[in-house]
Image (cartoon, rainbow, N blue to C red; front, top):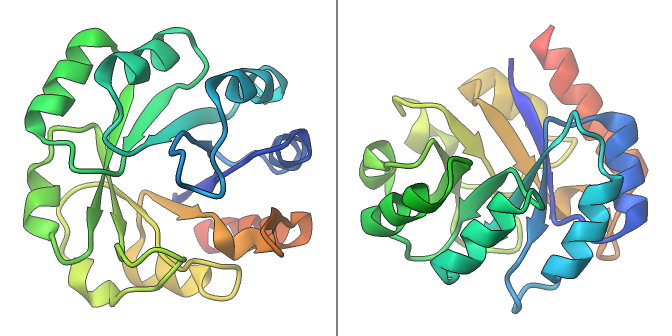
Length: 198
């Protein structure tokens, strides 16, 4: 049963869309260089409006451990997604500060490291940025549950699930129009995933 993660939510409109469609996860990006960056204060407001049925994930790149733990323990996010050069020690130390879920991102050419990750879940991406699809055959034999990211959209997510049956599919730019979340694309994406799950 593949789960859905809508990433890069920035506005109350985005939250309303998510509340209507009820993905299992949404992502808040705490990376200042990202065009989807939001501050902890903004995230707190968005989280207050988010359905309790949805898990809020904070996306970080080499963030100070204490800052990540603070957001987790304050309940602003339910999980941390690590997208930088965080190593096993970082994951261990974060786990010492919080009991919340840890997701660690890896590029598709680094599967050996991904399989050894100490995080609760792993996420596999192309590493190219900008929503690029990678060769899914690279991860067909991956031996643990993972979030699939990288260039997913309503047109290709059905094939991704048929081929890989990932734990979750993670989408951001693939559900946007002109840099903003597009309800129609979000709804279509969710519909395709749920149809494949039947």
